[in-house]
Image (tube, rainbow, N blue to C red; front, side):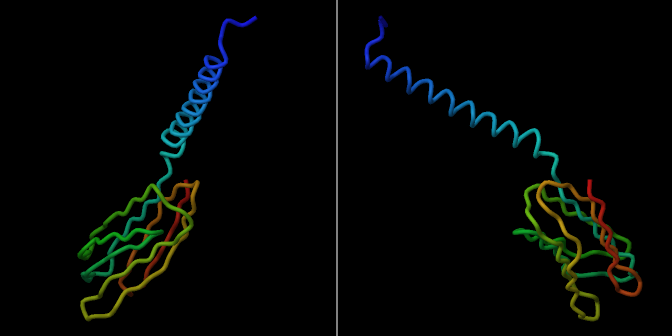
Amino acid sequence: MSCLTAVDRQKMKRLIILVVVLAAVAGWLGLRTFVLQDQEAKLVIENDSGEQIGDVSVKVWNREFALGTLAAGEKKEVRITEYSDSGWQINGWWPDGTLIREQAGYITHGMSFDDRAVFGRDRKLAFSSKPR
């Protein structure tokens, strides 16, 4: 016969359930911290146009990054670690008032990306993607 009363057995059962739940939560947090931490999407924007680009911004997934002015020859970088399926939308203004609105690339959850967007002398965007 057991020396535990029915009340003691119920308390023990609740304690075991609590320990199992806490272990599961700790395991999930560990996985998220150590395995998923390396996911990163990076976009480098480079201005090789010979002109200044004003009010540069990048929209990706559910975030927008205001990068300000991009001088001729200058590079700026955007990094994002939490994202889902999305593309890069690059906006800005040429000195003559022409709007820049470029959609480029594709990032997806579970992968890391090193992307590059270069505005050339012809004002066209050259885009390259290097998934890691």
